[in-house]
Length: 175
Image 1 (cartoon, rainbow, N blue to C red):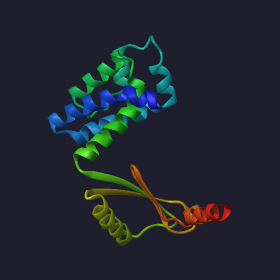
Image 2: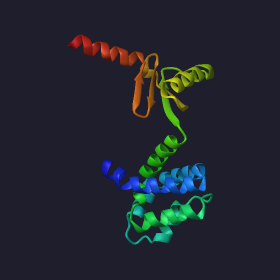
Image 3: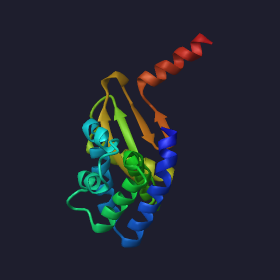
């Protein structure tokens, strides 16, 4: 995984620079996400690994209809370098660069029960205050948390779940 990230990093930076210059972060995000999803399909992944697959065929497999010519040239560059398999990592790194540029923190909140819109807004206000940036929140429900929530905001994980508290209490009592 770390090798794939290392290989993907310069391509993600190049894609980001092209998107910034063109002012088209959203379209590049969409195109990279599409190509990454296609590239992770087991059948497509096997095709991409086939040395008999030509550059034009590989690019046509991964090129979304809505993408511009610059994105097509980017895919051709990846095909020439035999790096199409790193598209998922490139997409993830691109999104991280975009979030940094746009001063946005992406937070994933997993709660024991469905959160109301008011609870999500209160959480967003608290996270904006903590990080000093705009916050995009995605939510999920995991009943095994028993109560509370786990907030994953990149490098910061806040475990306020009852399951996490019980686990920490059990560890403390065991020592």
